[in-house]
Amino acid sequence: MPKRTKPAYLLHRATGQARCRTNGKDHYLGQFGSPESRERYEDLVAEWFARNGDTTRHTLTVDDLVLLYLEHAQQHYRKNGQPTSEVTNIRIALKYVVAKFSTSRAREFGPKSLKAARQAMIDAGCVRSSINRMTARIRGMFKWAVAEELVPPDTLVAIQSLAGLRYGRSDAKESDPVKPVPQAFIAAVEPHVSRQVWAMIQLQRLTGARPGEIVSMRGCDLNTKGTIWEYIPESHKTQHHGKRRIIFLGPQAQKVLKPFLRMDLAAHLFSPAESREAHLEQRRASRKTLMTPSQLARTRKPNPSKAPGDCYTVVSYGRAIRNACQRADREAHKENPDVAYDVALIPSWHPHQLRHNAATEVRRQFGIETARAVLGHSSITTSELYAEFDDSKAREAIARIG
Image 1: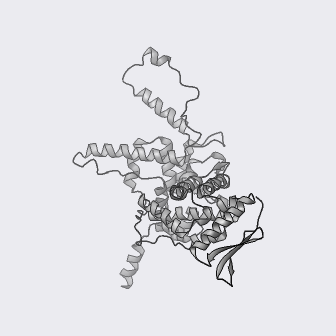
Image 2: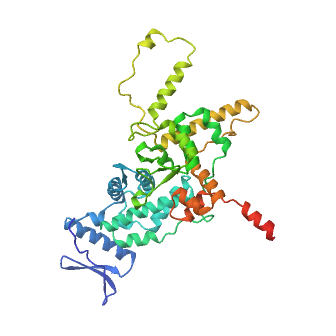
Image 3: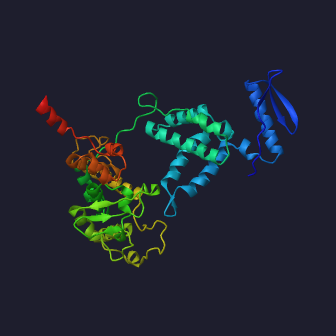
């Protein structure tokens, strides 16, 4: 894209008018600083860019900018050759901008436009913390656009002036804090999940690992020497920051993991395909009627469209737990028929909460600094969000001095 010097918006001192000079000719635009003169100036500059065959930087629409940025995001946010979840998060954030300002000039997108997009998020029922993150992603798009000289720096400076939503000072809903899962709710899902999923649940509870670190576990990532094993994930959340992640496996975690160790060290330990085969075998064993000749003659499709993958994903892992919670809740209601069905006896929970279980237990026994090391956080402040505060020590201290 050739660089051209944009005609300047100038003051003609003798008349007090705004002036712009293009192609050797002066254009008088009206009173200097007035909205009318600014509008005429923008039109004049757009015409000048078009005449010189360079319309992109001045007439680029928000819709065009979004498409360019998503193309960049697909290449920039990648891990192990695949786009990360951040690409999806960016798409979700930018849809609120496209819905209202798709045909507007990108350079004219300002704080009021960003506030309007943010209000659309509030109206859609998004929680405050999520809205602030989506707003930051919108700013990130304009930051990239400034670096690519697609919009002027003033555009970014202007939208950065819009402060984030504060607690209790907006119409946005507040999100519920993520809490550890009660042990009874964890135990309730055991009969309703495969042995692979139950092992992953146990490992998360014992190690504080992230769901993505558990589902991708392989034999070649394990160091089984010594009494405490080490698991170094091939990929993890802070990998792009150059940080190393080590997850320690104690005797209980080792006991859970040993039945899943394989001769093929590059294979994932927890296989959805094996889980599926075990499920089908159990169904065949529990049949109450004999299979008909036509059923016996059936052959499985060689390449089914929904064949199990090599390993679980965070989404499929979470879905398995959610489905198990629903089945456990139905059984609990059968045992307690007096309870209304719209009251959850076994509420749904997600695997990330198990990280909070481990963090809270480690903090209770060994302190917040040890919890930070176990979770792999750089800052104790982050660990505070995961580890529930145990006020027993405070009670003990007041009992002695109060």
